[in-house]
Image 1: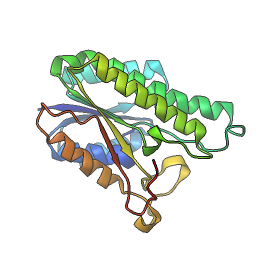
Image 2 (image 1 turned 180 degrees about the horizontal axis):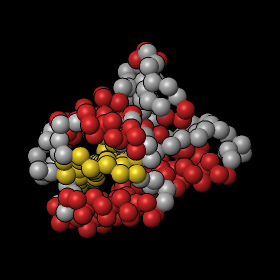
Image 3 (image 1 turned 45 degrees about the horizontal axis):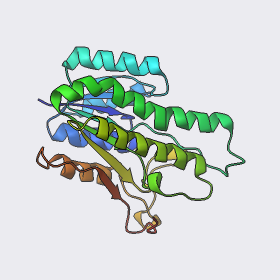
Image 4 (image 1 turned 90 degrees about the horizontal axis):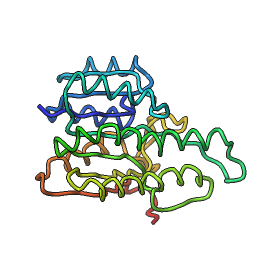
Length: 230
């Protein structure tokens, strides 16, 4: 049985991805800061599940999580680096601590997660899915610091791919998604331009079903109700 790691798995896109991976027969290693929600998710899934506290902004937390995962499963086949946060405001108004927090989670946290599991992924000729955003290749007013962390994440993923051709790296770039992101509350009408987390997960399911000699390097998806911007 294949083993998948999902960070930021307690809700939103991470939770939806964990659910489809369970349906596809993966054993799961789930990490997030909200362990109570991880426990509820694990109890709802019909597959082998390990879950543990994970704060990707802290190197020691990533190391501890990875050590426990590898001790439990031996190796991993898929890593979904999904943990992310967002603070928004004009460049001259954003607080230093908010910008630094985004860098720690969205950029350095992604880097830490991937590099920690690289030796196992090399052995298994595995796959990495880095969940970034449709703004990882564009900008918009009021989102500069957040966008910068996603552009940096994009650069890291592409460099990881070039340095590790035996591993398949996918940058998953959803547009607006109806989740708790940035203090939002789920339940918004689709006509307001939001994808559902389950739709993002289903798109990933399609990619994972492709033959192992096919490498999808980037997948951007948005609601038809979201204005197309590039």
